[in-house]
Image (tube, rainbow, N blue to C red; front, side):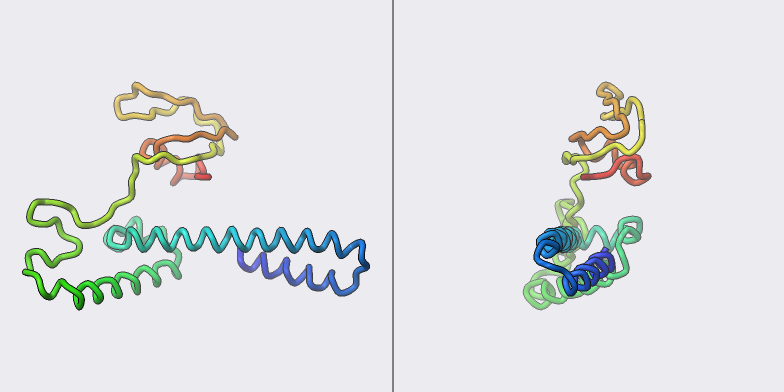
Length: 171
């Protein structure tokens, strides 16, 4: 995507050189669209990095989740995890008993220290192909009809596999 915006910016710069006042106005609209796409792309990438930071112990501990990262994201996650572990170790973990010093184990009372994604949260999604009736709970009591092109707000857990296989896109 970044390569696309760079190519488009090059085309705009070339077009700007040999234009009159009337065409200059149209080129400014194209420039605004390129700037909007760059902003959205940067915002999306910032959001992904924040999510990796929040869930770094889960992502690095689960091979399936780790495989979903790009090479740059995997490098970032590894470096971030090392930095967090070093900071926590130097800040306070060295001063407490070993049985309480783990950042990833269940504690003495069985409380899991690893933040995990909230799979029961609601997401906006768009259906990419007709799926018919889909169960929205484990017992099959709640069913939704998902037709191509429809947009829904649904719990993530029941549609997780459909998102992974591309039948549904998150919006």
